[in-house]
Image 1 (cartoon, rainbow, N blue to C red):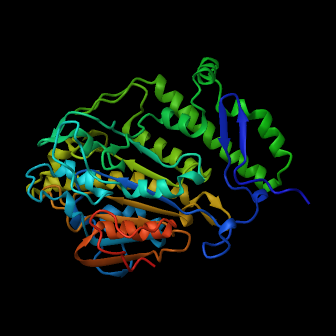
Image 2: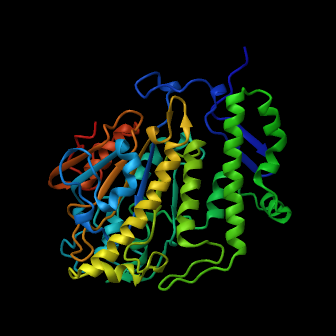
Image 3: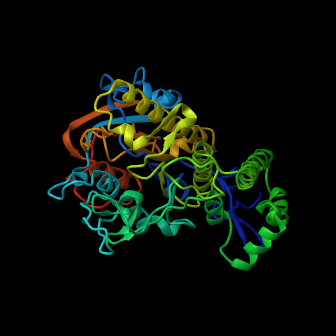
Length: 441
């Protein structure tokens, strides 16, 4: 009988520690309720989109079992059984509460914290600890990265971006402490290096000089591992290596191609087109979860208040400008197009999770993925009745395939408490929470 391979096994090479996906040789993964030492880990991710959504095309008609999905949610039809649509949740601390204009800055800063951000454009910023960082502080020592913060727009650490609020508020969703924002990683290559390459400058420089795949540097170690694996594991390992090589090639290709210059935003030269950028980051996040490199992540599609043009889907106007639609049906239709595009990218991510086997289930079965915005209707700048989705089974702790409507003014942070419980990270209170959200299981 062969000795089982440790779940923490890594392939080693020059400046590289390459984590592995779950393999049969590591032993069986059990359901959440069974022996903790052998169970599949639960993961938690938060996807954020700016400027709210067109709510009439978001909200399902009735409560209970999901039937035909509204137009914006239609791309999620293949994952309906893994979906909870949560209606009625409120981010009260994104409201002015006496602080005047600045809804976009407050929307993102309060989304995961439930705390009123201090109105300042100076160095005395203050918000609150975000739910992802509560989990990272509790379970981050169980993975190589305690958390992963990614997005398509850089995090600005200074400047006035919204009516006297520092730019940090509208560009940062994750907060380690009330005064410590967590900047996003934007470059796919930067994310890749964080996941698969050590930060040692000499080794990294040698790899860059040689222009070789990260897989080349673990070739000997991987050959030794293959000799210890059965046919199913060898196939899974080849698929995993193929996914890594594909991402490397896409990153390299993006670096060589000329960079389009969309209006209202400056994109670094090595970043690909917006749609490809979103999908590359999604692929990297799947790999991060698949290899158990982290169990906590945030993914910001665009900074709050973004005025990005979506000319590639026939919407040349800026997103923020359109969100102030004044009930103009033409503008509302264009907002809906942007919302659908975002949802298609989210569906791409869910499909990757669903098609990644882990034990007797899939990564999607072992995840809790939130998708939403700190604004509801961008025209009204309201922060009640937020567009919130929860995808995945949470290792059997979520009863999906439903639309659940909550009482008005139910704090969004009540949902965060419920998710922390399911991550084995219970806390009594977070931000403006009033208790744990029920109705999820």
